[in-house]
Length: 166
Image (cartoon, rainbow, N blue to C red; front, top):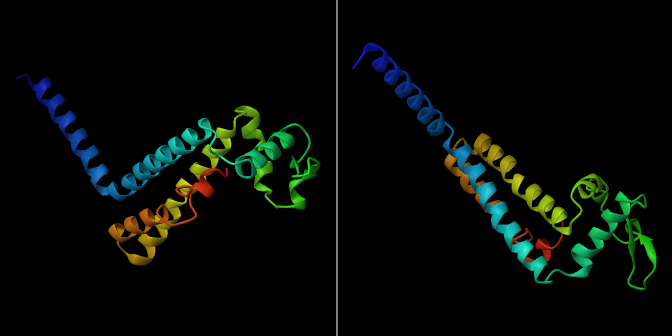
């Protein structure tokens, strides 16, 4: 082998060693991100399937979609009451976060956009749990198990009642 090819081989070997070292040093954080992405994809696939099969209730996703649509069209948080009257959601439920979703709706007008936003927000909730666990438990293994427990608790999108609410 020529000296140039030996030097090139050593550089590529050093680079591969540095990459492996970086991955090993950050394996817990990488596992958290991989779990977040996997969990979000699985939950969104379930929500999308329910949406396409008309399994999501009007009072969940439907009311919020209407409020976001109305906000995007200049009528902040307006929705239809059970009696058929146009009302503001502030009269029944206060969800000011829906106002912040109006630009997202304008970009991608679909009920699945709101569902995807909810799944993403809940998924990202695993990060602060991991960070707090790492700080207070002084163990990345323990922090990793704390993070994973946040996605197994009742009331998160794994439950039917929450899967339909963006």
